[in-house]
View 1 (tube, rainbow, N blue to C red):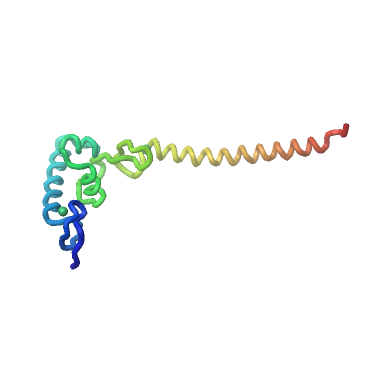
View 2: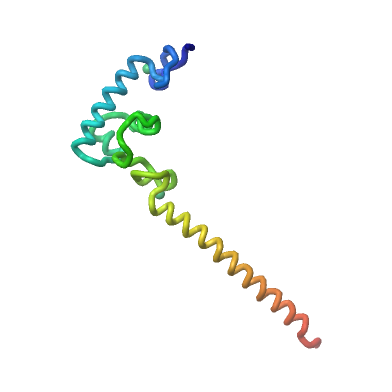
Amino acid sequence: MGLRNCLECGKLCMENPSKLCPECYAEEERHEYTISEYLRKTGKATIEEIHRDTGVKEKIIMRMLRSGRLFSDGLIGYPCEMCRQPIYEGRLCSDCSSGLAKKIQRSNEDRELERHAEYQRTGLRMYTKDEPKK
Ligand SMILES: [Zn+2]
Ligand SMILES: [Zn+2]
């Protein structure tokens, strides 16, 4: 067991899986309780709403969410990795993931168009070459 700095307050403490000193760990447990009480009332909420209504820092909510110690899936909205709008599952909102799908589809279409344009260019070049000399 080594020493490490608490992730939250930076104080040196005994190394432990939570990466927090005992005080911050206790604090986080209080937050966890507050938030689960809050969610029991609201059902679903975004991190922003939780922060607004419970006063728990968004950073802390995110950390609890990532560490998986908090809440069952689908209750807390967290920002989409691309556009930051709140989502409840996955890493991207449906807009961004369908946008991605569209982008992939578009690049296939682009390739098709390019091939077509290339064909026309070649055709044109041939045509120019075959043009009668003046
Ligand atoms: Zn601490
Ligand atoms: Zn998005």
